[in-house]
Amino acid sequence: MPAPVLAPAILALSLLAAAPAQSATHLPMPAHLSGAAATDKVALAARRYAAFWQSGDPALARQALADDFTDRSLPAGRAQGLAGPLQASQVFHAAVPDLQVAIEDMLVAGDRVTLRLHFTGRFTGVFPTPQGPLQGQGQAIDFYAFDLYRVNAQGRISDNWHLEDNLTLLRQLGVLAP
Image 1 (cartoon, helix red, strand yellow):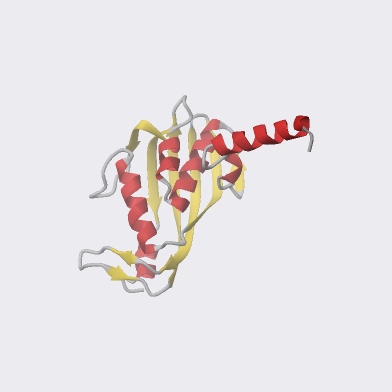
Image 2 (cartoon, helix red, strand yellow):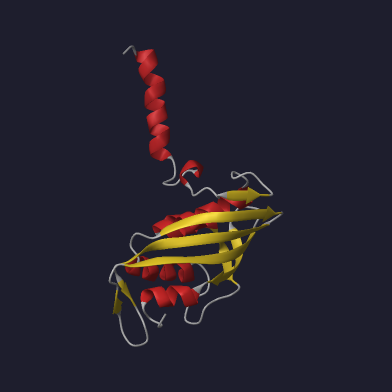
């Protein structure tokens, strides 16, 4: 190829190499979206956080969450701030390594975004319980969560209120009887 043709290709490859691990096109897309475009900064913050839950990649959590991130419905034993979601994700991915997270619904209103998230996978790993570690037997995991985020002017989640269907999850893990 002549040099003028190679130069743009080399430039494009260098830009791809310098791009963040998860571009906006590789983030989960909501099945239903109201109130904003998927590329709106509030929607992007929510999509980055969903990608973090799916992948377990701490870099995505750092991109999605503000430095002063506050979990407004903090579960007992979970650390406040970035450390809490990082620990929870690590524990959950150890139990369900093939975790998938789909954004079923997303509604953006000003600096707030609410989501209905669908978590699926197979419990093939180990889940900690008060009685000791529980080894998965390949059980299907399929439950929903609702989240409400406040997104700051920098496009990062500063506050989170969430509700997971933990009863269904604990039954599927075998921690509680069906």
